[in-house]
Length: 325
Image (tube, rainbow, N blue to C red; front, side, top):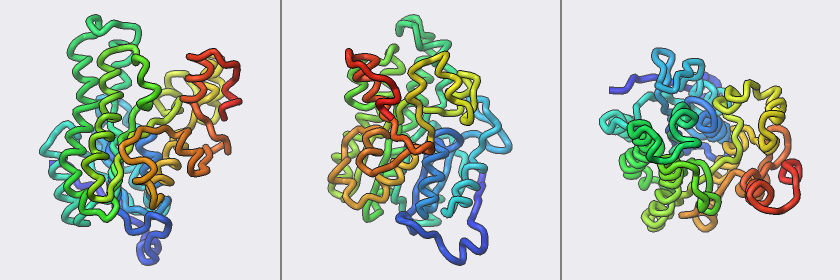
């Protein structure tokens, strides 16, 4: 059974109650230990939601990712500090029994779920060693199957077990976070296992959009652009403060966006009363959502990495990253 780790609002905040467009809403962000998952949880909390945050790294143990400096307890505390109510629960989303225990807890405490953000991954460590630059038959089978477990099977288990709670909402929202959109992923993603893992959430959102429609629900797949995640910053040996130093190593990093950019766009989508009409069954990106909702990144820019890659990197259009910010 999962550990029971809960972080609540301070007394003053609890007495006043959350404020914001998502006040009274119950959200769950699966994969909220760090990066985009953490940022989305915090922004949903900033909008007033109660947010269950899940992940495998706690203050007591680290996951296979091996980054014990970021924990789900910290994420929950950040959600609460932002104005929401953060609740940290550490199931392994590949373990059905642990996810069922999570479902039972949300049901017991709230009786429903309004927003489910499925941002599970954790396979970065396998990419450089087992995936990129290798044909599928050169990829160790165990590593390839692990990528599919982390990027596809975990998403299916989470959706299947939490959807019965989600459809109790008067406006269910299911967000699948992946890498790439249906349009950009028409290009092969370099390796069979990675391609399957990152396209599966897109098809999952498409199919669930059909099933949720009769409940007034929305299912959408959302992709960040070139994300300045902790993993990517570590890879380039930079921090958020000096991230532009990495452009010398990778010129395309000039179009990079912070995790808060995706998070702000998802929070705006969640607060949109017309989201089903706009997005149900679709795949989209932080750049497209930012244009629709008038969202900017932390530096005030509005990067559209996928448009930049389509036009300039993969296409024959002249331009620079700054033209797409």
